[in-house]
Image (cartoon, rainbow, N blue to C red; front, side, top):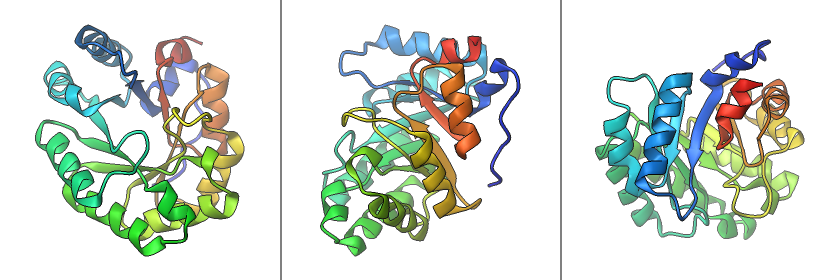
Amino acid sequence: MPVPSVPTESAGLAPFIDHTILRPDAQPADVERLCDEARAHAFKAVCVNPIFIPLVAERLAGSPVAPCAVICFPFGADPTAIKADEAEWVVRHGAREVDMVIPIGLLKAGRTAEVRDDIAAVKRACGDALLKVIIETCLLTDDEKVLACRLSQEAGADFVKTSTGFAGGGATVEDVALMRRTVGDGMGVKASGGVRTTEDARRMIAAGASRIGASASVAIVGG
């Protein structure tokens, strides 16, 4: 998965962007608007909470935009069997990409085998769907960030992702660069949380991000 170059035009950022709405008060009409914007701007994916995946899959039918669901969000503290069941459900209802949260407390406690097994179980449940692993960088030391990335690699995940945006911190250039150095070219790196402007997105891509999670996507591609 080669690291992409930074687009010179703001509109060229669209293929990097997961157009996202994860607010607890999001309504079906908000999700429909998001899907229509994603089709109009040719974003990479629309990322929503699981309840909206059937709606997103229907709204994006015939479009190259991928329906994406977050699971075990935002804390990652669900039992592995429930995470796997949730992943299987969203894929069965149309998700082509799944963003999961690791069990952060287990990682920090050094229970690495459990974290790896947790990710691997979700990856199996995803089938052909792409799996992104949210490591929640703002809660980790640099050594823990590296460890989380390596465990994600070992478990067969497709991407590592910085943040949920719900833990008091988001993506930083430094974290994206560290994650990219750790995983090399073999995985994707998604920068998410606090990416709001064209310049924010360009800086993340220059640091090694191959995907951007954003709710301000239209403003980003509009320059």
